[in-house]
Amino acid sequence: MGRQAAASSHKRKQPEPISAVVGPDRYVLDAIKKAEDKGTWKKAIVSSNKNLTEYVVQKSLNSLLSKRLIKEVMNIQNKRTKLFMAAEFEPSKEVSGGFWYDNGKLDKECIEGLKRACLKFIVSKEVATVEVIYELLKRSKVITSECTKEQIEEILKYMLLDNEIIEVESTGLGEYHLFPVGTLCYRLAKGRKTSAMASNPCGMCPKISQCTPDGRISPATCVYYKKWMDIF
Image 1 (cartoon, rainbow, N blue to C red):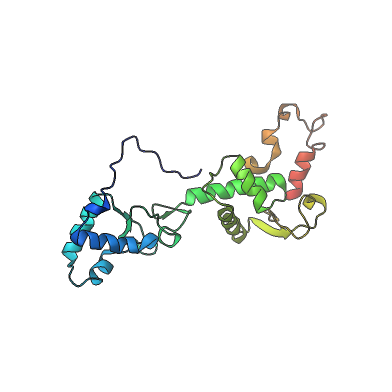
Image 2: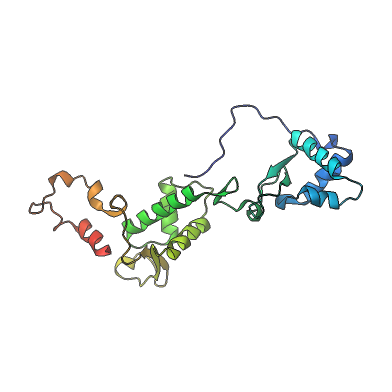
């Protein structure tokens, strides 16, 4: 699920040495570098030097882009404004929108996929902390190392707002015995209906073909089925 840039099969053109950049191009490059990971836009560069016209600045921008010394970036705050950033910088969260944005658009598919995965783990564990959920997501390769625990906390907050889960403090007893008293945990919200694929244990039971209402293996004697029914 982790979004990773695909490696190019072509050898990339290396940026030209900065020492070769002179005149207006150098001034424009320095102004862009000064903006670091926030970037800057053309009008800001023009207004910073009364000796440079918009035409000259645009020409310099085109030259620097072709030399791969700068790049255009999407500004999530104002998509109509082109921002320019030095090639060695990555856009700040304020500019790019952070992990949940891909090319300036909210990655709804990524968010919904993570919500489903978190819900599945919470149901399977009955009670779980963000640390447990994060480790399960990594172990299952649902996320990559670029996704942090703090970002999973954001997903859990979305789920809390949607009343899919609730926050509870561990009592240290029963189903909370793995967590010290007072530890913040998450569990399925009462009345929350999850899909059979996400929660019903029967779909993955290796004995399903031998299970009958009055047999030795039956829903009445299955501890996993009882736990699932207790959730609702």
